[in-house]
Image 1 (cartoon, one colour):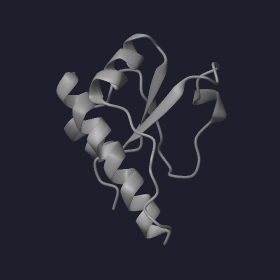
Image 2 (cartoon, one colour):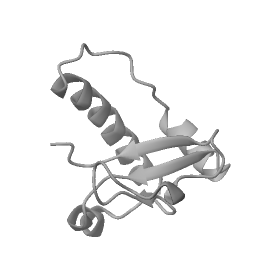
Image 3 (cartoon, helix red, strand yellow):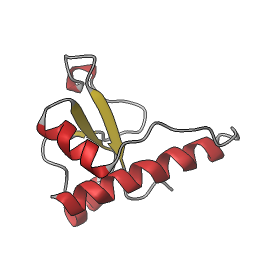
Length: 97
């Protein structure tokens, strides 16, 4: 589980950097969390993982248990989001391209 969380956090960092550059924006400081912070947040239910991978990658790499699965990059049901609006969302994707 810890290795998967590490990969998810690293993917999140890669996505944040790619999305800023691809939109032509300067590389701004993106919010970040350490693997330990994510792991503690998941355990304490203060963090919600959001899986932005496609079905093929999910079958290959697995899914963080309890993650919200986003099938389309711009649409997913609002009901899938945590009711507690203070919950941090940690988005991850293995292939941001």
